[in-house]
Amino acid sequence: MTYVVTENCIKCKYMDCVEVCPVDCFYVGENFLVIHPDECIDCGVCEPECPAEAIVPDSDDKATEWLEVNRTYAGQWPNITRKGEPPADADDWKGKPGKKDLLSPNPG
Ligand code: SF4
Ligand code: SF4
Image (cartoon, rainbow, N blue to C red; front, side, top):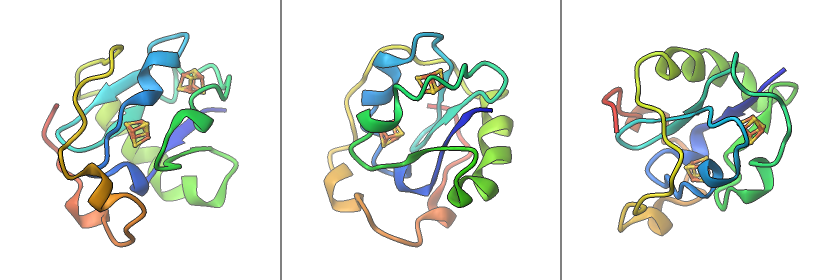
């Protein structure tokens, strides 16, 4: 079991989630965060912290297509444990559908 970061995080990247994770299993890309599925202890603490409602348990239908994205980039991007500065236009992108193609593969 793991929690999964989904499309809503793209270009929002508020990072409230990273501060509360007890095992520091978030990894940061240019415009997205991921959770390492093998490190997450399934505590659920991060889910209500996300202003974009981007974090879901892997039992959620929305998680299916994002689980492998989280696993892949967790192996490529740097670990993040402290909240940084969110993008200036984060609120403009909050809740917008169809952001999947905007996901940057670059590390943050
Ligand atoms: S709080 Fe939500 S939107 Fe912000 S970085 Fe974490 S998952 Fe992404
Ligand atoms: S569910 Fe818990 S362990 Fe997993 S990413 Fe969220 S805060 Fe970290």
